[in-house]
Image (cartoon, rainbow, N blue to C red; front, side, top):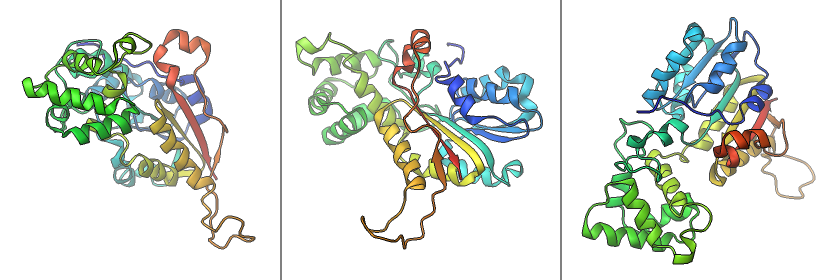
Amino acid sequence: MAAFSHYSVLLEESIRYLDVKENGIYADLTLGGGGHSLEILKKLTSGRLIAFDRDPAAIEASKIRLADHNDKVIYINDNYKNFPAHIASIEEASEGLDGIIMDLGVSSYQLDTPERGFSYHADAPLDMRMNPGDTLDARTVVNTYTREHLRKIIFEYGEEKLADKIACAIISAREEKPIDTTFELAEIIKSAFPQKMRFEGKHPARRTFQAIRIEVNDELTGLSETISSCVRSLKKGGVIAVISFHSLEDRIVKETFKSFIDGCTCPPGFPVCTCGFVPSLELLSRKPITADENELEENNRSRSAKLRVAKKL
């Protein structure tokens, strides 16, 4: 099994925008390999960090990596969707948080550990669960979902134009035998592509694997509500930084931030606002922040990363 490691994308930019105070209270809702958390902890003296991750392997590995700072960390092995309930019970957070970071998507460890079944580059049992204790896995999705259900998630979550052909190919293949491994699924997906497209550009299975992973881990449901809860939990002047890796996530982040910045519900052109909306966020960067050339050379997984940052008013 691979050591739990994760290249922390946009690390320098995230920490700079968070502007960590030595006595501040911060939350990392996607602990992963602990990279962002470590940099926050280095700047804390009397402050605290609340670290979430749904993957127990991430929690255990980070307890080792962050050992010099564990007296300043509250670890929570749970989905960040349950953030409001946990934060309400933590005394250190009772007056609000000074900053929150979310690094969405799958970790390098999860991709690079074959037995987790996330990658089409290694042959392994179909799994894709971020929390191995969850019930739904990729094998169940691939072998039990109807053609229409498969088409829908592949099209919506993978933004894959050949979703219907891929769904048909999966249904046809599983009528012969269950689809059990990542390589089997990748070859079935590839077979749905015209011959000339199979070797052009990125791997044909990339979007479908993303879609199935999102479905298995229910990654998009509740994301907007979680971000909204985060905004409400911030102190005045507190910062929220969210890193996304595909357009679906980024759109949710963008629109949720916008609802706190420009949420007036009065009719367009209405001369006076009567809905009483008061902005509670301001963007710290009007455009999403992306990786620079140096980071792209070090880690090509950062090529799709977008960081959006906002401050509580």
